[in-house]
Image 1 (tube, rainbow, N blue to C red):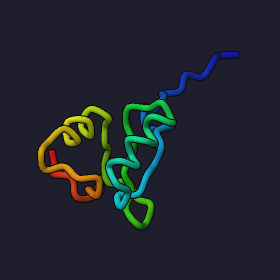
Image 2 (image 1 turned 30 degrees about the vertical axis):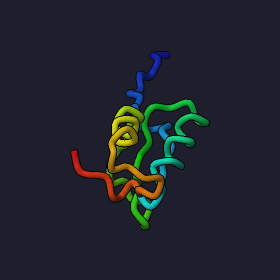
Image 3 (image 1 turned 180 degrees about the vertical axis):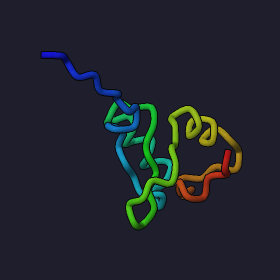
Length: 77
């Protein structure tokens, strides 16, 4: 019997979140799940992108940041 090699997709187990979530909630979710990225989804649960802990941390340290910023409002990078 030959072992089957499967390719592990790095996003397969990343938490999926809606893009209407605030940055604060996303950071809290990342901390609780002990992950450094989340998969963004729209209202139809279609993946629309990826958000990382590093990106949110940088955003949080800007003078224009408020706790009401939603993930869908993040500037495209």
